[in-house]
Image (tube, rainbow, N blue to C red):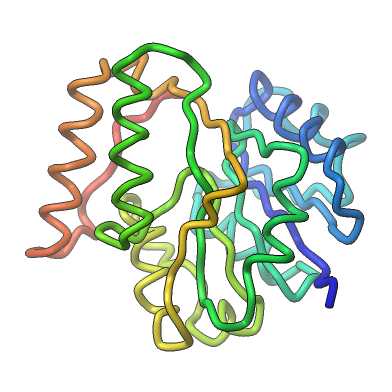
Length: 228
């Protein structure tokens, strides 16, 4: 079976990164997919960058990651959804590998993450992040979340009230349909711009702190520091 994949990219002021992300999708070896870009609250040229490089652009007036993703999921034609960050590039075989490896036995997945810079601190950070994902110590995302459209709709999609840990929240709710997995033979190269802005040590500490807090408390009041 060759599932149709809908790649959904939420984008807020992403004119500097989105072009490379979309170009990587145009180089995919898997032919059965569509790309939806959901611009949300943009004040730059994100929509113009996306218009000729994807199948559909949806332009929302207000900023909101959860709403952008849910809007894309509602408009998607594919039975397999891939939510992709606007600053994350897939290797050329990624969708082909996802179509083969992400079977109905699983409810959600992410890919092997790789930083877009070679600094040892970033490589070390992603070594541990991939390790956490591989053994499901943290069921999260390396810029990519895969799930089945019908299951996504049944659990109500992303919680639009959450600004942190929204990926893990979705994955946790999807687990009633099957386990989460790391697809380790497909790579997602993601931007280190947040860590460049905050510093690698501080960024890693914030991620660990929020992860620990999520085990003990409600995170609906928490937000990430904006980087754009």
